[in-house]
Image (cartoon, rainbow over all chains, first blue to last red; front, side):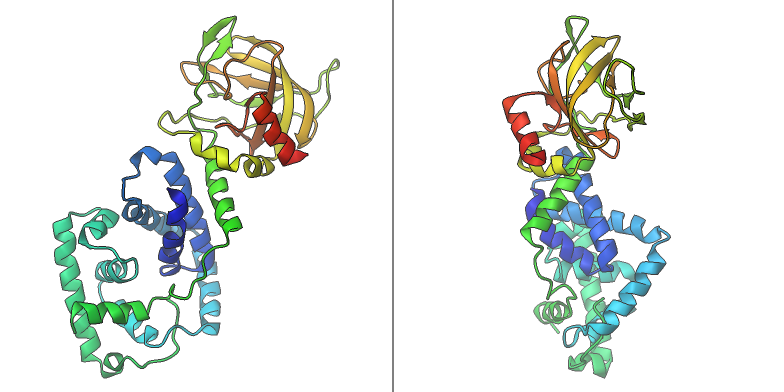
Length: 159
Length: 191
């Protein structure tokens, strides 16, 4: 059960934090998974994303965060992101964090509203409504900024 | 911009799109580490015989490696961390990782149960596969939980195989009464 989840979890974490923290949190999530096997639902990924979010939050509270952020910045300066990446990520950054996370779960993790709900611990109905609003807000931001709407920005950062 | 277009834009900006899959070895190591880290708290399945009766006991105290004794093997005194119990977790998946799991232990030995009384099993090391020499392993148990080691019973004179990492006994099939299968894991791990 845990084995097929490793790659999606790695990508989930790589989208949200630096490589060192991602490795640490992945280990933590797998340990939680082992300890709470009986709690893992039939569709484990949304549940595991929820665990990963909590573990990530804990990790980012730690005193090492600052050091890792410095490493991440240095890393990112050397690695250009995909074309259009910076523009869209900039647009995401302008949204409320909750909205941006909904959109990441939807587009990057490929979750539907019910799975987003499971990952965030909210009702499917609430997830569907919030996701709809978040999409609309992102589309507005992208439309309002000519640079972002052209989708041709190159370079940028990984997160 | 419709949903499909928006999703396409977002996916094009996915920072993880170029990630290579983790090599199988590293994936296995991750799972193994998680399994080992949670092995100690798992419920073990078989009772311990205490005072000639089948009794159930748990590793609620600690495994203490005692000070060297004049009539036995010598070694430093080490106190290992206590292990709790989690009655809800299965041990079955560990079998896949037995050898690699044992290799990750910092203490591994074959020993003989010298005595079992008052909730404590004393085990004399016969062969240390990994870690410093020790004179005696004491498994202190409490009533009411699961047994300290996997295995049918702990009886005087019986041989056991024990592995521990960071002070916690590796249960779930990695430590227990010596059997052909378990000995084979140890031989492969440390041979």
